[in-house]
Image (cartoon, rainbow, N blue to C red; front, top):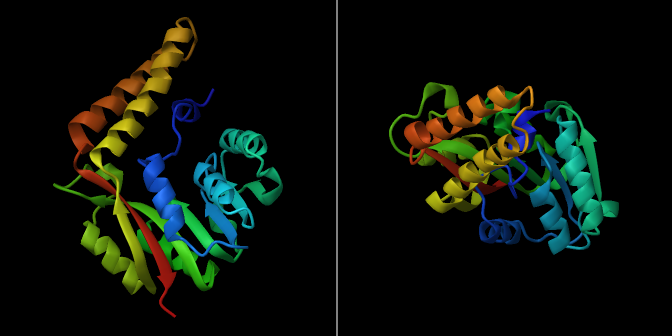
Length: 236
């Protein structure tokens, strides 16, 4: 039993992202007709699947290292009738070299060692005129806890994308409702498991995990940690 995968059970996206904002971001990636899309660190690939549902001529590849998340994505793809247009691959995303018209990279910059490294690694994968939907954390208020790995303001994050050779087409940030929905549902999935499995060997471990997560969310980074969604295109 993987507690982190379990915590994702009640989430639509593995990010503070509402249905309405997801729809807006997909629209901002247009044109999507016949687009080849790569989702780097796709998890259960919900945003990729929604994009394919929105544009029936697009095809996609989702890449993630977690087998359980990919199993969920395959079930969802089949149930929603897009399985023939998506390939889901278990791999380290830093090993991949596919080029694409659209790249999605939401909360995956840590795989390359940081935001700058991710932006630099992804840019060669974008075809001329392509678009990158890049989701990453930023410092929204006072300095967040060091282990969150966030040291840039929103302005500094946008400036960094320019230094890495991109132009910004769209910017959105997660609001408080999106954050609270994400964090509370993350915790709720574990709370439900605890109620349903009171004698499980992992009960104490999971209880400690959800307590720590909720405490940190409410006491340390709520209102301090921001999350930005940037639609970017190569500068040249």
